[in-house]
Image (tube, rainbow, N blue to C red; front, top):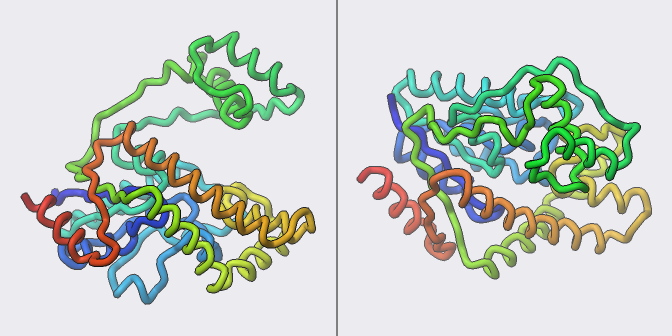
Length: 293
């Protein structure tokens, strides 16, 4: 079977551009590995690739769900593995690209999900009481007391499996021959690119896109996960001025980039490459030479 290429790195570092160049040189097809680009109508805030940017390269798992639909990492695992199989059977190279680390790990590693039939929202519990309940069944938990969403997830996991979530088997077993390519750059350069990227998004219609979604009154996980919509919803609700919403988008995008670095460095064996934004062909050649050696 052909090798699988996986491109990771923080937001704004050039993953999409590299994926196109690699696809052209490696007879590849691209698979989305960004949880927010799964959804239709969420284009600008998620930095989704445009039809022009695709350069006729086949792209998969983009725009496959509506914003009110539920789509889990388990769904992605099944869909992505099917696409990898289809692409490899054509003798072509699957290229995963995106910033959602858990999606990548679930698809490429022997990552198992338990079916959870009984789900409890635990709405009646205040945070501290809910956290103490978790400690009583999983004293080794590393979940923060204020992370209510993950606490509820851990309690439901225990309810369904009778096993603490911290005991869940971790796996480092890859299911494919994967080369992980990570793009990086100086932090100041990256943060400046992120800030300018937000400005460009606004010029390209981010405000109008967010208002269109705001007016649907849909507040699903799909809508509230990406950075760019919920911050502008505050402006539409007259809770802040536009400049404050924009600054919040930039701030949260920079923090998200930092979290992406941390996750990638600790979870997957990434081969890192410093990006030369003034001559992107240099990084393309460097990566191609590394893959082919």
